[in-house]
Length: 495
Ligand code: NAD
Image (tube, rainbow, N blue to C red; front, side, top):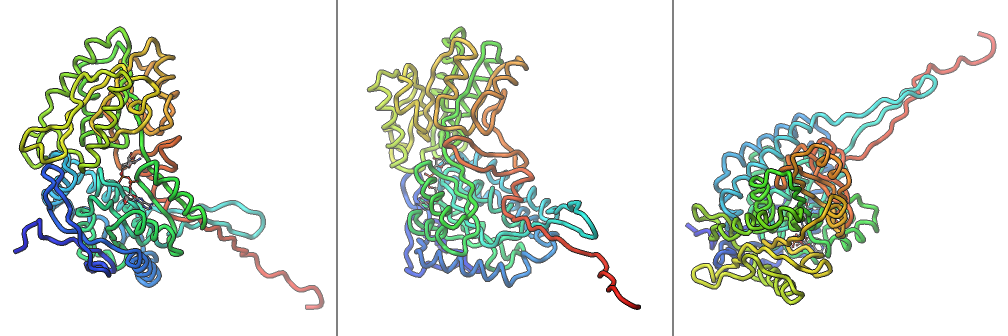
């Protein structure tokens, strides 16, 4: 029997798993050791186009789109229960591929199950409207699926962020082509393998692992592409938007963030410190919505920052598969280098490192991409560590004088994904939440979301929202039908 490191993960096209046309496989590395954990096929642009062709044929010829929504609901429900029964297997794949602790991966898989269940419940609730019009006429709207929807996912929550848009697209009756990130294709391919058993017709759910610039772009540029959901960096997002715009293809962009967390003096400081720690060190800080800029009132800054610093220093680092580990490695050597580069830059511009700030250099962790949980203070507001998304376990601290100062600092960023506020005062919570320029605000919580709550950003964090009841509508178009039901006019003249 092949060990996991020899196991091959192919492309899922038309309900079958296969190698790409060029037969290329590449090793997928465990970030804790940089040893291979599996081999993943590398699709070519031709494979991408073939997946689009197969998906389009399935959309036209299978009963998926035209059937009652109840059939799609049943299939999505079955996908959820199949995944649920294999939580341990999928969580392990996610941990071996991304590095996060198994406990976090299990939470991710449970979230995917819940997402599938939520959208399974929506598949038969896509209703139109009737609209009053003059005379013997009836006007009504119906919602139709778009066709083949393209989904390009990042590496930090590989299955969760893929299914977040795939589930509503399937619920609406579309066929789907998913491209996982090239670093983390395993769980998406394993998910695609479940489709036939769940009763999803062949060709409705396709997965093509491969490089972004060629495979991802071939999907977006394909004339059969009817919608694009891109979750990824602010560098790639605009290129995707330009290409989609050439054919007026509807688009959702979920991009980066630089979330502020505002701590007021009346907050429950114990809970707030834990929330701040979780909001930046979970998944080793590789989160679009990481609360990565701590803004704390000057009257409590000393003791509060000390609490956060001791949380950072106390976290147990190690491979995600090991019991009791609280933070795993970063996804790749490059990502670890990129994060450390921000820390160097912050130091050089006068910043102080209160915790962490370095790679773990002692064996056995030195073989992996472990960066210590890091807290920086006194970093100039203009420095890269304050302005740019670091996407690692690095918290930047700044104090504020009063509410106006806090809001100004919070909004002084090109990003607008999520803000966090810690206060016991309802009036402060409400008024500050309204003035923060982000798509989401959490109060007295670390970043938290549910399949039923909208998720999205403003400013450079993206366009469009995912999750919630309206997400399914994103994957439909409205058609207006006007019916004249009047009796034919009687002809004039002798009867
Ligand atoms: P990335 O932009 O490098 O890649 C994202 C996906 O796009 C991958 O599948 C990649 O292969 C593909 N891709 C890359 N270049 C492409 C191109 N030219 N054409 C088509 N596809 C292309 O991002 P990443 O490094 O995988 O993920 C990290 C980024 O994702 C961070 O900026 C993070 O904030 C963001 N993110 C956002 C959200 C959100 O919901 N807003 C969630 C998670 C991650």
